[in-house]
Structures are given as structure tokens and as C-alpha cells.
Image (cartoon, rainbow, N blue to C red):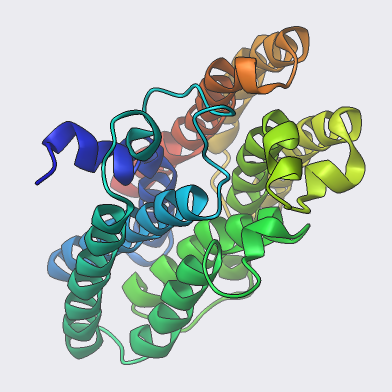
Length: 301
């Protein structure tokens, strides 16, 4: 039996802000563009998104321990309860399977009350979530890990939310809304992998950060952030987002600058991973609030 603290660390509950933010962004965009979404569908989909994300993180926790990526001699993160508190690895696997079961049930309900397309798309997302760290060639061990994580946790999540909640077929702009999220989620994974270069190399991984090197990996983080903010300006210019988004985006960008400066000064290593992940998460949070709040205000008007 595990404690609530251990459960929350297995699923890394603090990182769920990423998936929830993507879901809320898609829902806010639907409200602004098409009108208020169905409340029941909104709640069921939100719960399904959270269940899939928690299960995926649980699989990552299990496989990182199983493959020796998370080892006591290489990892000093106290939140890694399998490493530092002796929680059985099988417990993390069981937690993930139960959460996937919950997600399947919610997905079937969503298919009945919204669209049957949720089933194949959701199944694909769940397969990628498992294969990210599981299977004979985990995606996370390849240079494509950041792209897959950003693609599915960023673009696919936002786009699927719009697809399910919108009462009408896709418009061209609907397919672009999730691009900044893709870029910022990829930057979060790049920070993680750049800090973990030494441990990942010993574990036999071949991440993009290992392929490019620490300095280039750091540059990728900043480049992804810059493009994400600029692309959002482009969405405003195209009329996909209301002009009021700029009033939230500009302060978010200004507040993000010293955070990026702090990342650079701190450096990217395992010793700085905790503060660095907290910092890049703040950038993501600033961006999300800077876009979502103006969208909700514009929709409410």
C-alpha cells in the first residue's frame, strides 16, 4: 500500500499543469470561436485527459527505474520515490494500468456523448504514452522524444480538445492553435534532457540533447521559446486569436526573459535540474495564462 504522497510523486502531479493548460486552452478557444462547449463533455474530457497524462507519467516512472535511468548513484531528486523510498516498481506499473482503465471508460463515454473518433485517436495517444518509455525501443531514448512529447502533449491535445468540443468542422486556424504549446512542451523536455545528459548517456539513451551536446541543447530551449511567442503573435495577426491576447502575451514574454537568463546562468546539469525545470515550467505557465485569460475574457464578452 502506498501513501497519497507516493502516488502523487509516481504520477508527478505537479507536471499535470501542462496537460490541463493545453486542455483549457483548447476549450477557451472553442468558447471564443464557436460558443460555450457542452458542460458534460467538457468535464468528461478533462477527466480523461488527466487520467491519460497521469498514467503516462506513471509508466515513465516505472520504466526509468526499470531501465536504470533513475538510480540512487545518479539521481538526487527526493520525489523519485521508487529510488529513494523503496516503493516497489510494480506499484507504479499497477497505478498506470488502473489509470489507463479509467481513461478507457471515460473515452467510451465520450465517444457516446460527443464523437466516436475519440476512440481511435485516444487509443493512439495512449499507445504513444506507453511507448514513450516502454517497448523494445522507447521513444524517449531517441532524438525524436522531444518532438513526440511536444506533439502529443501540445499540438494533439489542444487540437483534439477543439475537435471534440467544437460544434462545427475544423477551420484552418483550428489546426494552428496548438503549435505554440507543442514548441513550449518540447522546450520543457529539452531542459529535462539537457540536465540529464550524463545519466542518460550512461543509461544508453540517445536523446536530442546528447546528439547535439549541452550547449546546443540549451540554445534549442531558447529558440523554441522565441518561436512559440512569435507564432502566437502570428495567430493574432491572422485573426485566429483576438487582439486582446497581445495584452497578455507581452507581459508574459517580458517576465519570461529574466527566467531564461536565470536558466543560462544556472547552467544545465543534474544538480540544477530541479530549479531549471521549475523555471521553464514558469515560462509555460506565464504563456498559458497570458493567452488563456484574454481568450476567456473575449469569449465572455
